[in-house]
Length: 117
Image 1 (cartoon, rainbow, N blue to C red):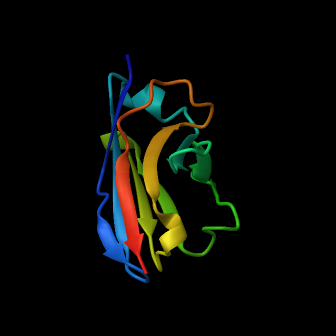
Image 2: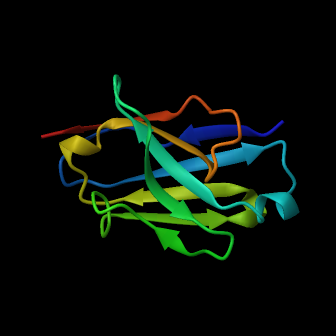
């Protein structure tokens, strides 16, 4: 069973940067490389939203809300995703999760990002 462990969240001030990591276990490298992956975020009371995706060919896509500020990358050998977040805004405050793009794996605990104004 694939397990997802997110880390790197913190309390930061508006304009600062953070890098989140998502490590997967329970999957071999050759299988991991086949998946399109994504980062999501959720604010209490709201639906989980997609904030970045990356294909197995390393093509990335972002919604307008984070485009130009967030960068998603993957290290297949480490079965790890990274989300570099720059110029953070208070509206980026949320719990951040990773999963494959179809969200078929069990969700991890997420990592809390809080941005103060």
